[in-house]
Length: 446
Image (tube, rainbow, N blue to C red; front, side, top):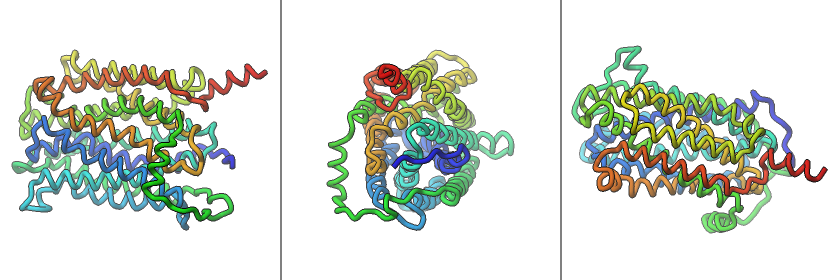
């Protein structure tokens, strides 16, 4: 059944919950390495602690997608899942900076890794149905706009979350240095508390302001639920476009994982000349990384509204490839700039790539998926996000230690190479739903 077009503000409300989800994720991405190092993690083992996030995402998202496809309640199909996920994720944001107080007889590192795992699982429970909700509610011609609005709100939420510790220090005078050895800086603690509130409140807006279409006939047809076996069968039957996009996603997310894990230690070491997590210089580096991450997310928010226009002109594949090349140049420039302020230029390139990564693959994918399997396939597509992060988590620390000689700046350079490979892979994707290709086919028929 073809869905009616939705107004811009209807799309905005439908996607608004992603603002809070990304607010929480931005706090996680900008500060978790800093927190882990405060708890005593060595730079060569950081990627292992980060494995908790993609591992839970790989398990949770297909399951949530599978069961949300089969759900219909008074709250609808997708909304119950991201409401429960938001509640749990908000609680974990409150717990993360207080890991040492949770279990005095266990390592704070282990507790923090466990909290990160639960937090990421909860965020995945909230996040996966949002992707499917856009595909559920919008006709094909509005999907690029829908995912672009989602990207805009992701960018706004991420800007606010990433820059918050810097703002609390520089505008409100809060300390950015831990008060006790092995503790978390006060500005980071308060930022996580605020993040928990924002995440829950924004998801609540979507729950209250968005309607979902009931299944055809008003009720779900009773089908035999094959559980995990059915998910594996669906994985084996994934559309050709999805497999091709998988390679693009692999190299894209391998690059992003390195950025989140190594940007703080790389900037602190390469630009501020310190590896001492208790030093004032490291605190400044950590806060500046938050600003840099806010910049790339802000650029993504702006670029989100240019993507549909560009895609209509040159096609989705060319749009995505050009965006990824901008990101590759941004990562490479980390090695060559001398002043940390110049990294603002680097983050503009990365922000263009990030905006496209959040929107274009999903716009290309949605048209190739069967509507009844939209949720599970969106969840399975997450494999191509989590698997590269897991691979990076397993080998990234070894590369830093044995190939880069402990200099994490080279991990960012390798991220640039990965994005360049991803850009090349884009041209091998069969995007049947591309507006430019559809227009060309229509002209040929005429």
